[in-house]
Length: 400
Image 1 (cartoon, rainbow, N blue to C red):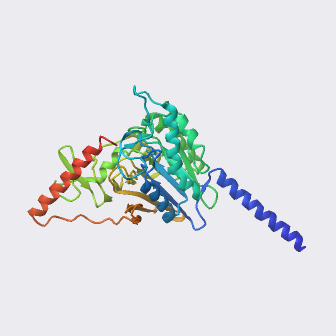
Image 2 (image 1 turned 30 degrees about the horizontal axis):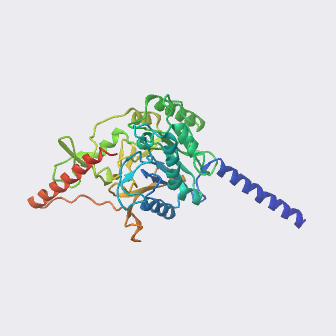
C-alpha cells in the first residue's frame, strides 16, 4: 500500500513539474504565490558590439535588486551610428552598429552581425537569470538599417524572449500583448507592447489594439482586463503633467518662449525637459474608449524620470542607460498586486558611481517638492541653471 501511495505521489510531483515547465516554455506569465508580479523597465541601452561597462552593470544590479517576474526593454537596444565617448567601453571615439562603405551604402551583413552581438550583451543577464523579457522597438533600432524580419529572428534566438508580432499593420511594426494569469488561471492583467518607430503609433495599430482589447473584454465577461502600455516614445498627453511657471522657478523648462515644470499636485520625479500641455493623441483617446489602460510608460528621452496621473491613467518617463550620453541613468520597477490591481507600486532607481572605480550602486529615487527662491540672487542663479539645462535639452534633440 505504501509503495502504491509513493508511486502516486511521485507521479503527481512529476505532473506538476511538467505543467510548470510547459507554462514556462510557452512564455506564460503568472502572479506569484504571494500575489505579486514585478516588472522591471529598462530603456535605451542604445549601445553597440562594444557595450558600455556600466550599462551592463546597471542591468545586472537592477535584476538582482528587483528580482522581477518580467523585464521590459522599451526600445533603442542599439545605437545606429555617431561619434562616441571615451573610456566607457572597449572602443573609443565611435558608437553604433551601422556600418557603411566608402560610398555610404549600408553593409547589411556586418551591421546585422553587430546588432546580434549588441543584443547578446544587453540580454545576457536576463537570459542567465532565466527571467522572461519583452522588447519594444525604438527609433535607433530602425535607424540601424536591418529589417523587422531580422529583428524578429534575433529575438527568436533567446530562450526567455517573449517578442512576437501580432498586429497586421502595413509597415510591419512589432506590436503584441502579454497576459498575466491570476491564481484562478484567467487573465488578471494585460500588457500592451507597441512599436512607435520614429514618432508614434499609426491608425492601423490603434485599430488592432481596439479589436484585441474588445476580444479580451468579451472573454472576461464584458469587463476590461486592466492593462499597462509599454512603448519607446511617449504620447502627447504627458504634457498635461506640466504646469506654466516663471523662468526662475525650480524645474522650469522652456518650450518655445514659454516655461513649464512638473505639476507636483499630480506628478513627481525629475524632468530635464518639458512637454507643452493641452495636446491630444488618437492612442490615448483609444485607451479611454476601451477602458482597460491604467498606466503607460515610455523611454526615448534618456534623462527624464517622472510619472503622474492624467485623466485616470498614469503616464511615466523612464531614464535611459546609454553611458555614451550624460545621465541620469536608471530603471523603473512596477509591482502589481493581484488582490488590489489598481494600486501598484511604482519606483524609479538611479545608477551612480562606476564599474572602473568599484563605486557603482542603484538607489531608489526620492522625489522632493520644489524649493522657492528666497531672494533676487537665488532667482538669478536659478535662471542660469535653467538656461543651461534647456540648452542641453536643445543640443540633445539633435542626437536622440
